[in-house]
Image 1: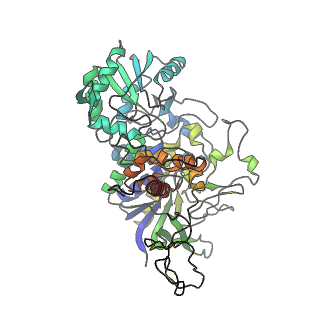
Image 2: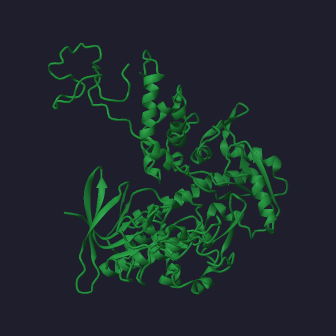
Length: 430
Length: 144
């Protein structure tokens, strides 16, 4: 007696959510299982497609032009550039508050280190900060928020030759926050708390603007660390704009990332609105498969979810594996081997682990491209080139054949392959 | 009085099975025996080995970001300090005093859920809370 669905997606990150959303909108009865939180919460909140080729050429102006030139093994080549566009169209439709869909060209967004990241989509909160914009810029850091050194970031931007004047200043955040306050604390204070400055209560955005004003000079836009509100980021930005008389933008930071959190929440909202079932907190710990017969691949019959020690069966006609890569723990490794822990899919890798990496820290590491290899329908292949299971597809970072960090392609691959896997699964059950 | 580890009831002999934990078996007699802990209803478990959990922490701060208390309380350091960092500090210092802010932890366990590495945050927090209550909290206080 199992809990039934038509399409079961294992993994609640960008690929899993896109896959489930695509399948749900195509009319399938979809259930999404997610054990831990999405790695989106640690990522910048920017949605990239392709920033650099695998050979390091870039930053690319038009990722869609570059995709057909990628190696055959690259997931973009597996699904085709059409699916990349369709996946992005689904994203644009489902997720409010993102920009960049008006052009195929990459946008260049300054990040907290002062580097500039090529990206296809970016949150509205970062829009005023694009590097192609020539307005004079003031970056503002907060004294106790060590992840963003505004002076250093501005110097880095100047050295990179950006077409605008960039200055950085560090101010003390208004209110009596502790030195290691969480980013959510800053956001909550800006959302609504009144802080006390010189004995009088005042709204936090207004108090912050007062501290920034003396440094404004002739800068026309001001960049802050990405903590500008959690419940009402648009409202916080507007108060700052009104008080400063300049455009305001957020600078994406590393983990923990409020824009990443907001993106994950919006994706879950969209999936909920599409009518899918969502279960979080419990891991898939096993599965049962019908054995292969007469040249057909085996088929996954059910998976088992651990709930406080009991193993509860979940059954579906079609399954999508979107558990993540080495970071998201969809791929595990130790001194012996690299494994896919949920279904035991084959992960091609050299036997000698000294061949998994290059010596230089920023070298072209083979491990960055580890993952399952698939057929044209995104079904993971075993060591002999046959699908492991006829009704299992894989999407996102669990796939091999690409290096998301070097290419700046993580989000795009997750969206494109998630979309493709979800659509295929829904078409089979329709 | 009693330490927080090891079998309850001091030296009671549990070897001939069946007796409830903390209650001396029949024959060991006098329930007013000095080393019988009347509050020990449950068998004391062994200490969790929290070292592998602390080693798993890679400081992503996902726990701090999911903590509802850290979001509003400026005196609360957050699960990242309260768990793995404080655990490490406790190891070498004999008289380490657990920070009082641990009492403000609501035990909602969102930090456990958020941790991508499986750090046993709530176990660490509650172990620290137990140490604080045992060692630092006044027995005459209302809270105790």
